Image (tube, rainbow, N blue to C red):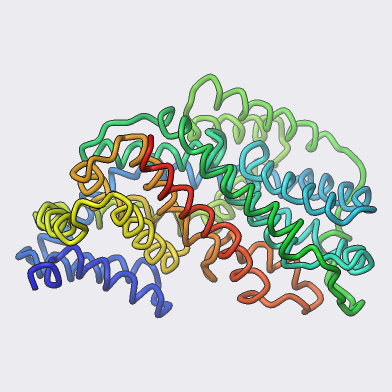
Length: 435
């Protein structure tokens, strides 16, 4: 009975239920935090103070999001990414399987090299739909290709969005008593990237290998048609800015500074006019601001949960229930991560929430730091691929449904859930037993 009334457990359950009921993520986090605080004997006023105090833990990450979003908006405003997408859409053709692999590669670049995230999809995909129809490509495979590129790079590659993801994992593990670095995370997360690659190959060459018929309906190609084919001075300055961001990431190992340097190059080089700078920051906040704020509140939520003092009690009760079985423990850990992330829709925002419980539990169960990294990363990433509210699924649907023939849940969410979440769970559970 003590386990069922544990403040942390009740709070996590409340968070999952509210998120799955489509309540706003920020409201869900705050209500769940207050619920846990009340059950833990903390007053609402004190709990709100703890919530706000915890913002500082993720402040650097939130700043990175806003600056990176602004940089992506600035790149988009010059039309360089659109031009590249349009040219690629013209040259890709022939073998359908090769096209799907190329789509995955382009999506990977949008996360690590040119951080435009999902902005390229409405430009690249709609003009290709008629060609995909001719080749009878199953769009569920295309959804998996795009989702792979939007997800696997930040899990496995310590660059771009990967720098943020691995930094959050390392910071939250360290804050909860298991010191690790982002380099340690990169050392082991390739296993999860490989699991996702296997899932992608199964989707392309096995599950959705058969031809699928689509009607030749008109797709909305307005975004692509508006793109110019001519390089301008702004485009060349943007290329220099992208190069500067890449170099700054390598030299400084700080994505906030790298994004700031890229923005300064674009502003000084007038790729973005001085009187348009406010628009770029507004666009960056629009793209990434919500995620940044959720990250801040998630850090505060973690602080409230620690203050209840119920984490140790929950860990002891969980170990007793699991009977010391590490396979059961790994399975439960990944399932909790799946529930939380499916509700929130962001693997990044999930990490501070689950780290409070996972790190002490993994430590008591005898998992090594490497195994804990693997379990934390997998648990955080699990729901992202299959969540209806995630950019990883919303992005592909926005392009593939341009002619109204691609259903979000059954053609994007379910295929990506099956081909990525199952391999991620298996890889995390199995490899955590041996590393």
